[in-house]
Length: 487
Image (cartoon, rainbow, N blue to C red):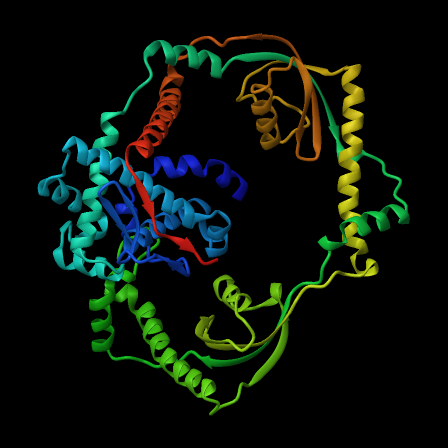
């Protein structure tokens, strides 16, 4: 999935123009240590437009939320770092301000009425079926912003929409019909499927040893940490109806059902009691943290734990892993306890001996050997191809390829219809599919497929147009950057 996102993030960056609405309720995500130079918190200047650090932070938070919606629970800060989300947010912000500079040159603007119309349509600001000013201010406060900043961001995004609408183009009927026939063209094919799992290997101890020797830096012990920990169990106090009602009144927007609707006071009682106990327990944990920091108390537990066995949750485990010996981490919640961790020492990975790495090396060697062998067999079989005739197939004939799963068949068919070779081989997972195209023909025009095709081609046309538009704007307006990563 990460590979897919890295391949397509260019288009994600270019097509996600409007981020304001996604920002509401997305939370606030930090990116670590960055230096903004000496321009009063500005990270860049595009034309006459100054980009402030808080704009960059909001762009990053919004983009982080966009990716989190795609990946779900598996998305975290580590994955965001691997995808270079900080750079993507910065580039997106530069692109937006290039377009805004062009809007300034054209004299385009957004009226207060247009901003108000957009505000009253944002679900997060609605209470009892209508826009509520108090809810609006509270939501913005929880997202670390205010009406002036938010409406300024909203104005910029509406202006971006206005500029984009000027250049919006659509495919004409002839292009749609031709693409309709081309995308669903059919090939009459014959295939032969080779499976690497069927390859018989004769592996000697010398083969494994040589492979390990050449790749031994890939087989290292896991990093470990010597840590001390102190736990503070969650309180289970009861609270009066008045205390519960007061908390609900202040933070009702935080208590939501799965469908996003706010829970009633009665429905939220259990969550409120838990939140109040967590808050009270955190105060105790912070007091304990200060005592430990000043040496007035000692830790209860000392242990050495491998990186994969750290029991504190992804984000907290990462914090421990990124710490240096001597660091004392502030209390964080794990299950029903607040945990304080002090990192005593970090044990770096070492190359495993052949005996300890043998099983891992053997498994890897088998994959490599099978891959090489199946390629040899595939090349030989292709010279004297004798495949099974499948008949006519199109891109959506994934149920017609016997011997491949639907996912494998889709991969094969996409590669087949992208190939310019009449005969060849296509790798699909641990299989190689040999194919021969006996004949090909365009499909009959099917108007029912026009809508799906129209969306696809219009997106491609507009993406390409906006890409070229931004490239020209880069030559038109000066971009001065003052951001320097400290990573």
